[in-house]
Image (cartoon, rainbow, N blue to C red; front, side, top):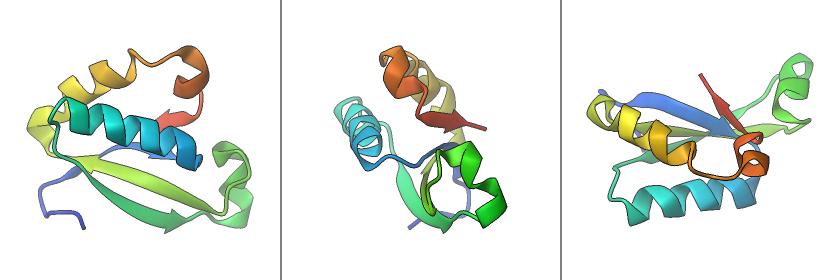
Length: 84
């Protein structure tokens, strides 16, 4: 569940990639929350055809730190993460 002040960090359609990002955030003690959103049919191409997408939320103070951590992942994983 997200708090009122949380902001979107990224969106991930692949569950395995989501787990890697979550593990990375947990290991580095970055607070986060997740929310699942349905993807409209016409926007599914952006999310590799997924019907649902996991939205990762974090506190604004931790956003830069979390983005730097995500950029340490290999390029194949990063290609599955949609940063807004």
